[in-house]
Image (cartoon, rainbow, N blue to C red; front, side, top):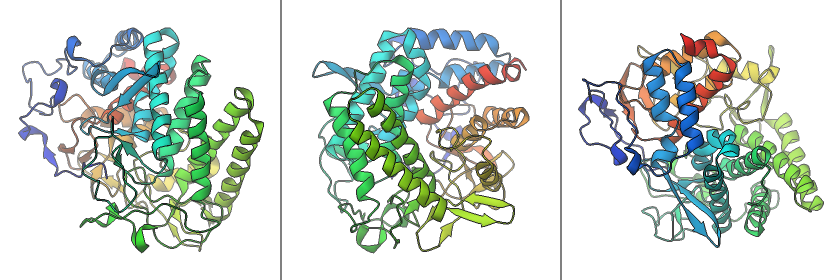
Length: 474
């Protein structure tokens, strides 16, 4: 778990400023409600000329002052508050914390910097920062491909007593398929955007091989593999049953995941959205090794594994309903299927955003319809909002990530407009997105400083600026 299952915070009662002067109180600055919530320039961790220019450009296109203020606060939040840049072995090195947790998740670090990729072509310093994230992620994977979160150095962790192969470099060792997919997404996206293949050195190629090896191990076609995990905890979603290997499964070509992108334990070991994400990542690795790196054999191995997982998804991950097939969230290979969705990405809702399916794919659209309905036990409707949540923050807690992902994957202008209105009305006066908020009272929220949600909100505004500019003009 991300050490963030905190008691709900009543924003109006918050009195202690967060690091870098981020404020969590909904009543703060009543005399200046739209005062910038960004750290002073001298306290910002990194400043990108291209990002600042984009903020100024987009702000001019937004007629609603509060929405413009939210965008200016949120979009640069990762750069303002969470990055530490430097060099290692003569190459860029960037460590990215999640916000209020001083550790680097492979998933979050990719998602936090992803929206800056299009601007890297015009900003050498930003380009180096992104290359540094890729370099750091490769080193992390080579330390342990089963870990989800890492320390900046071998400093140890309060999770050191977990029953798994912990080491001082690791913050947490929860095996999640998407932890290896996100670094591929970033490396591939960086390469396609900038044309720069310099991060694809020996460390990165070693990490790519470790990714494929780990996926193969976790197909468990020849035994349970080397990974197990148990934690001494009162919370069952923080540990794996059956001696730490997870609930029973039948090997079928799908990849086992111990945990979801929420860091909650899977119920059935085959997490469908993460397996679909793995197929996409393997295709991206194949492209890199076919066209940029001279290893056609490894490219073919990536292709064959992707096809094996894809076929297993067709066979085991679909529910054949009278109105047509839909994706299950988790399956076990025995025919058991779990129908829910979680706001953390990858989710079933997010599949087009990650490039796993087309936005107009019929199976996706049918799946999307039930995900955003009362048939999904984690879709909540209340006085403050309606939206997707998940088990991690508990019942009735809506995640801005889910609302943003809904808008990013929608092709309906009215639906996008509704999502935008909801996000504007539920930040509880803080000027930032949160991990989650209560469906009946947005002032009850978790995590005041959650950079992934902030930066993703910025990406949504940029997407709307390109796709539906009229929504920003009011």
